[in-house]
Length: 281
Image (cartoon, rainbow, N blue to C red; front, side):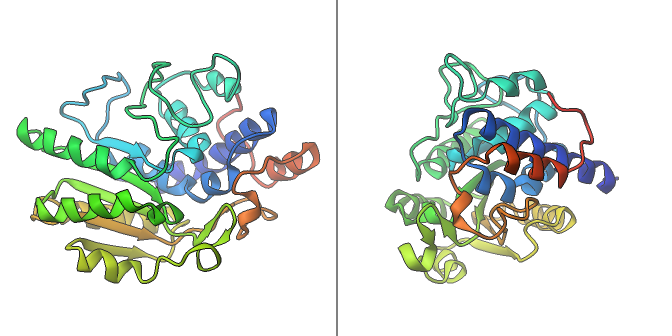
């Protein structure tokens, strides 16, 4: 049985990790990281069948790919807090020779990372190859991905979306962080991506929508509902409506914190708004 309160207790600590990591180097992407905190916690602490004794092949376990790699702070925090590596290593974020690069990479050998995702638009293609590999090996595990909505302006995504349906890849659950903001403004201001639900459906995908994208119970419900529809010859996508910067009032709902770091005063405000629950690094 899911311990919702236990999951909720992790949320403010992950937020603290995010703002402290970005502040320490005056560099990073707090907005999207904060917006996806609840999703990442639900995935790693409840939904996925995964092994913290990391192996690159991931045989017999669910696999996750972060396509919008700039939100690495939230991923690093959740990986550390779920046991992949020491929480103390979060203090090395973006430092010289650190395994915790600004965008996830594989050559440093960081546990939990299976692809470099500094360049946007590539995660789904890699994930689909992994899905097909699992099918060839009679591995019934699920592959999960996360994508930024602005990232879907990259054409490679739509080739992959077409490929997935055309090949009946049904062991994938992709999620779009649908905060409708990107580094230069709103999606409408930069380049509208139109009706995403209709587009995915027209490409042959099963679509779930969750308007409460920062409510962990709602996220668990939609992820579990999506799991029941896998293995039915259709790829699945969740459109998760989130708030960029969620959990830090001055960052919430604005694209200005997509890639900006808080100063000392702003850090203190953010930390005070998120009470420590697990212990800082």
